[in-house]
Length: 181
Image (cartoon, rainbow, N blue to C red; front, top):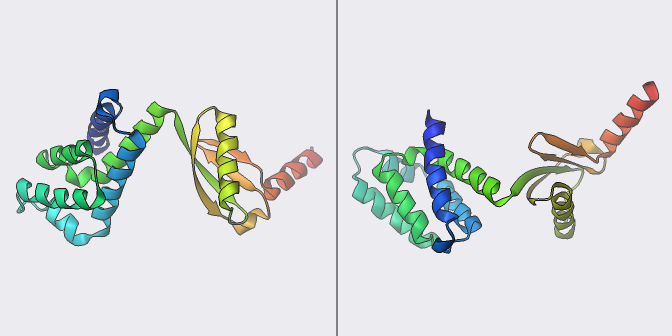
């Protein structure tokens, strides 16, 4: 049920953000909401203030307005935060943020890829990987990079449930399977 409610709020925000008349870049809105969510997650005192029924909604709005001012958050995202405070859904901010990110990705044709490489990749290599995956999928690809020493060399890309294995370990395993057939 909580996920359905979070999705409802995320859909409403996505509809507003993607309205061309609003003039707000969807990636900017995603970043603003994520930054506020991280700030709330990192501070136990802030969470206590926002989640406490003893603190009035007006006081919660004032706290959020101050934080939003420090982060230079757009008026649209700030108003959205006011709505979830007024409807006592601020406890669902993390779920709303995740659902919003997924909706924006879906509606703007962006995919998220998890890239695991045998070694740390430099900036040009990271850009090249994202570009090649974009050509492969026909969509914009946002990559998260990690390293894994057990790969020996190469990398493994995971986009949704699809895995592209370009690792030495994967190639050796493929060769072993072909030789045993």
